Length: 496
Ligand SMILES: Cc1cc2nc3c(=O)[nH]c(=O)nc-3n(C[C@H](O)[C@H](O)[C@H](O)COP(=O)(O)OP(=O)(O)OC[C@H]3O[C@@H](n4cnc5c(N)ncnc54)[C@H](O)[C@@H]3O)c2cc1C
Image (cartoon, rainbow, N blue to C red; front, side, top):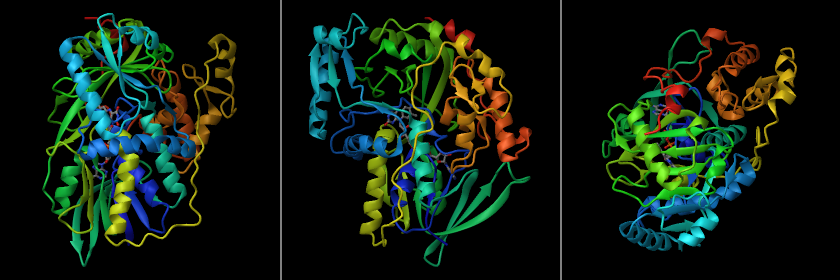
């Protein structure tokens, strides 16, 4: 029997697992996807928020600022990628300007440092491509950008190195409490096995970090006290290098649906614009549509007019797990020993380290014996760090090197070599999809979106893991179920 079972391997579940792996506990994490970080964690704005938006007095307000400040130390230990770019909230009218005053006051109450309102002259100086109609802005130096899936992978790798048992492809389908502990029914759909199997897991405590399904998982245990309303957000992402059109994360004064459309460089130097915010009924609907994307382009051009649609590489969407309480739900439920880390919508990526800390404190005050491990390993090395791309003509011959040569170029767009693919396959987390390799190495993230490297990566996974090629998928079991995202050609013709 385990001491703790965490349900959900997004950034919240993995941050909790990493924090708890400091202690002498038998711990398992069940994730129904093929990898960690495949829910909201892989598809969001990737912002380490400054902490001025979330309302003072809420868990979001408190945990976002605390989480933000924990990132630098985590980056030193786990090497996932973080840049403190700072952010701007642009005001285009007098009404917007009043909203900046409100954000400033709220941020100061939350304890954000260095927040100030700047005028047009300073705006032009620090963000030279800002739209001409922006009259002033709220500047926050504490905002950062990160690579959310790499952060989640780093947390999980480190937790595994410290003893966590990670069960991928394992969906929790039922929970019963018996004799003071829990019995979890799980369905295991592992491509390495010929058939789906049912496995029972026993655990003294459960932590519910199931994201958009956290209300369903809670109901399984008998707590129906909240519900999740999924809200979709769509984005457009541009080629690596195009991120240089914006120096900061550039927001606009918020509207009734929240923070609104942003324009931001990514950690890897791409540019993203988005998201919208629409309630949806199907919790896994990751489709994108032209009308919404056109609206995003129109709005984003007010902030930074000079982005170039010829540089577009794809659209994507993510789903927020918004709870009916409108705040995070963290704490022991009405079912003793069943801990909620539920309803974690934005700014959940920012808050995740502080959520993990809060859950550990909660367990300790509830009487869990937390004895530190002497053997805890704090550090995790990066797979790759940003590097300037070479001129392709100078290295094109490397793509023709024979299979097995570590220097063979596997991905031409992002210039990923065979040795890097092999390295990730030999780390602690089992890999059986080309997307899992993509998130760790960037092979497939470039302009051709994996057309060249996809088959090469697949063959390397097959050779290294022994899995038959027809059992290796691009993404998880559900990938490809919803309407395909619109094509690159259609994207580049999107100008409203
Ligand atoms: C459009 C959008 C933009 C955002 N932008 C930002 C931002 O810029 N900054 C920020 O701080 N936050 C942002 N967020 C919020 C942030 O992405 C989330 O708060 C965070 O990723 C939530 O992590 P999680 O682990 O709770 O959920 P998830 O990442 O969704 O993980 C939950 C996991 O549980 C698994 N699971 C579900 N049910 C079961 C089951 N029965 N058995 C086993 N496994 C199960 C799922 O497969 C999933 O992997 C944004 C979110 C969205 C959607």
